[in-house]
Length: 417
Image 1 (tube, helix red, strand yellow):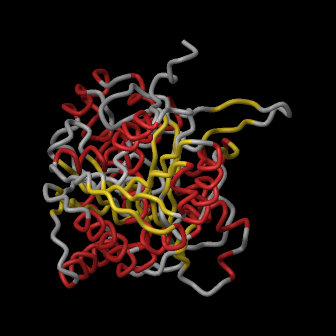
Image 2 (cartoon, rainbow, N blue to C red):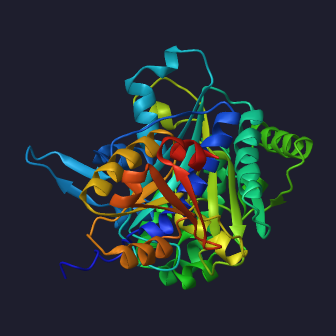
């Protein structure tokens, strides 16, 4: 067991980590183009942050959080999502007193106890962005457009953007009553979790993972039928803004999202190539979350994007991520004076930005050449004691086996060329 990673976690080995570097760099670059700045929050938070923010009727809080007591008997939770910690940081550091809007992005690990499956792990990783301080639908459209541009930049073709409005507290209450009325004859068939949600938050029933509850929820009244004038106008404005930005979308009244803090806008980017768990990116507006967590009344909007699912989607689309360049130069040495010179040379080459390697296992000359070939070195510099005495070294081009002799004084300039 000691040599097995815990269930639901996964090592990212050196032969795969370059793919992560590629998407991380691409995400940071597009966020910066849109005017977002990076924020980093702790890996764990006080449990109450999530019970108050995410909602105590959600699957996350009810079943999935990694919660424990520290030595001072405080309840601590490994963060299961990114928005609540960023909101907490926004409030704690009084960012609301700065010029608004505040635009932040993050790249984080998250933790949820659930059944591991393709693209869904117990430790998973998320990109996310948050915009605080504006209720304009232009912010919602910009958040969606950033995700749209990012995914298109990576070359993903099979994604579908689905949008919905889940209203505000005013119009949502009328929808809840209609939903309870619709589900009342089916109450006894609901799972135990959804029976608990029936009075507290029946909207969560439509997001239940139970196939039976999903079937029972078919044909339920949609939030779009109960939107107040303000929410209806906002949703119409969002659609106009997205159209103006040339972002294609589908209105899907079935989108609920799995977190209680959402209001008005809810959206998902869905792939049909990664199985049942096809949502690659999801988010929406949350105009009351900052206030719920102790800050001033401040609107917000953002998204979370699963990195593991993103990489799966890219693979399913046949998108090849370029592998890093191989070693530029391998220095093969024979003899102690040659080894000393090799150490001096490799240091100088690295300071010049050249990727250089030497043998660390005291192999013979033949073994060093085999090793240089295995690490795909472009060139091998051959240094022996005789070459040093003559003030010359050989440079071998590994792809063609061509070899030429240059003076020691010119070796760095020759390799830089």
